[in-house]
Amino acid sequence: MKTLPNPVFFVSYEPRRAIVRTANMTRLTELAHRRLCDWIWAEGHAPVNDARTLASIARCWPEAWKEMRAELARNGWVGARHIFFHPETMAVLQQAKTAYSVASRCGKAGAKQRWSNGAKRAPRDGLSPIAPPKTPHRPPKGTPKAPPGPLIANNDKRLTNKESRLKNKDSLSVKMAERLTFSSSPPEKASGEENHFLATLAQTVSAFSPKQSSHELANWGGWWRLRFREDPGKARRVLAELGSMIREKRVRTNAGAAAKDLWERFA
Image 1 (spheres, rainbow, N blue to C red):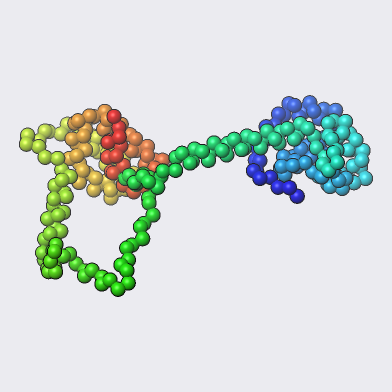
Image 2: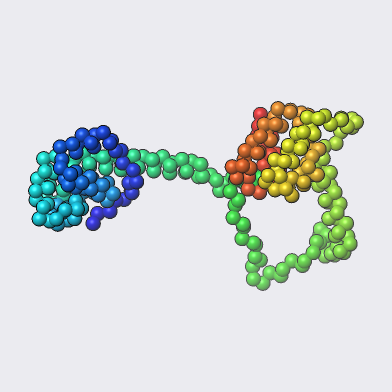
């Protein structure tokens, strides 16, 4: 049996027109008419012109099909050489197929435009899909593996454990210092609006992760305070958008990083 390449889930059905069409039919003929229409729309093609098959679809005895077929013919049904169909029913089917094809093409075109270059863009603060992990580099056979532990440049001497810990500690201190904004002027007193903004920031991030909320204020509280002094309206818009993103599950990894990204992109 012929199958439908694109499934049809909905058809354009006009109840008033159907009532008028079946007004002069008998009860059993109307049932047969509606069942034949539903069968064509569900299968995507007209049934074969076979008395036993059509009687089974119409839910009538094969002996009564001849009389019912004659009444269906008076109401527009046509028995061709191989199929039994109604022109209006086939037109509705074709309309549904066309609508499905148009919607499918539009959806594919939109998805292609949105994701065609997705693999080339670097993920930002967990909002974009995370790229698959890269395959770890494996040295070719016969190449000796690099010795573990940090090495001094152009030297075979390794750092001692104590020197390594001191170097890592200094590096961490530099990184923490880079995250803070220094000023030669005396610090300004925090206003009530600033404190309220920071409290709201903590509450918003806490909806995503309470642990990230405490870290955000401890590590980036000064940065957010300066951003609020720079542009309070923009800071509030960023916070409102962050709350919306968290409620809609659009933040995947780090709420603080998402908020910082919003600040950079907002005008």
